[in-house]
Image (tube, rainbow, N blue to C red; front, side, top):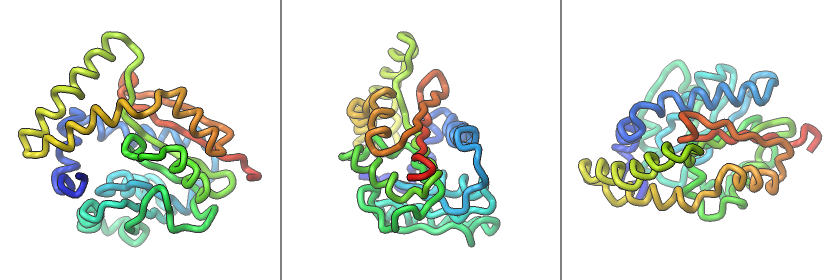
Length: 228
């Protein structure tokens, strides 16, 4: 499914989000900085990197870090690899891997992050445990995900948009099927309290939820114990 939409993925996300995805990722990184309050990371994993938007943004945001983006969809990685940026290319690498079975030793990364990936994972507790495994002592996790607004009117508008408008936009570009999947995937995602509970169960002792845009997206921040 994701291979089918790889070439149009970024363009469609910009349109479907009304351009807000240009704001959501940078703000999530700023929230992460305030959450961590530590020295700049040297190693970062973008798990489920897709076409590499967050991977490259993290490389710019943390100019001393080496950033590795992994995804299980080869077509997405092909698009990511074609995008060149000489200011960061030497510090960025992409590879094929599943979030559920990361090919890295325990404690490899100072930071792990993902954007709009959690709702696609069939075994979210296992994914969080695997991400916890590869994070170094004192490191942190950022998971950015679409969420349901808390206000009644905003929630009703949210569901109308994602249930009806987004699939219709997908049909216009010949990709209705994958975007019909979006509303269904959101229904299977735990609410904010449920996500925080899963992060705690995975071994993160400090967790926070930082909503954006009236709760349309939420940055989940998690940190393991420094002496773990």
